[in-house]
Every structure is written in C-alpha cells, then in structure tokens.
Amino acid sequence: MSATTPPPHAGSAPEPGPSVEAVRAALAQVVDPEMGVNIVDLGLVYRIEWRDKRLEIDITLTSPSCPMGELIADEALDALAPLLAPDATLDLRLVRDPPWHPGLMSERARRTLGE
View 1 (cartoon, rainbow, N blue to C red):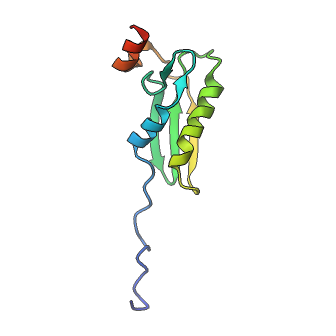
View 2: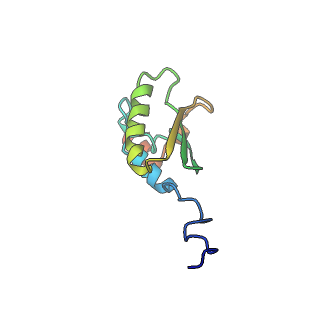
View 3: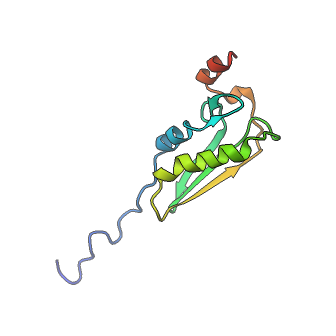
C-alpha cells in the first residue's frame, strides 16, 4: 500500500445499526402487564429510526394514565440494550400523540384479547 492510499476503513459507510425487524423482535419481548400482550402486537410502537449511531424509538401507552408506563419503558430499554454497540445511544420516548386505540392492535393481539 502506498503512502497516499487511504486505509481500507477510511471513507467507508457508517456502521449500520440494528434492523427494524431486530428492534421489533426485541420489543416483542416486552409485555404490557395489564393487557398480557406484547407492546408490538398492541400497536404501542409508533416509530423506530436509526441514524448517526442513535436508535430513536417512540412508544405510547394504552391510556395516558397507565400506571405501567415506567415499567414498560424500563423493560423496553433492557430488551434493546443488547442490540446496540457500546458507542451507540438509545432515545426511547413515551409519546401521547396520536392517542392509542384498539384499531392499532395486530390480529394476534385481537385474538388473544377476544376482540
């Protein structure tokens, strides 16, 4: 290699983060304790985005007054941590808009809840 040839890693594309599918699979391990259904099937996951070594996720709750919000968020953080490189950051936001409604549930969640 000559002195003017850049090293193989110079100018390479940024390292990709976890896939949306991997993030959804991890979040599917988080169960809303009041509903007994995972947060993905409930339709509580509104946004998953990876950019600049940062995983940004917006989730909501089935009710603005849901007492399990902090527990669900903590379990989501724990489920997602193994997917991230040590230098990546995770921004998990609890959002209230748009409000959740049963129409956001998957067919599996509907069957589980008898809807």
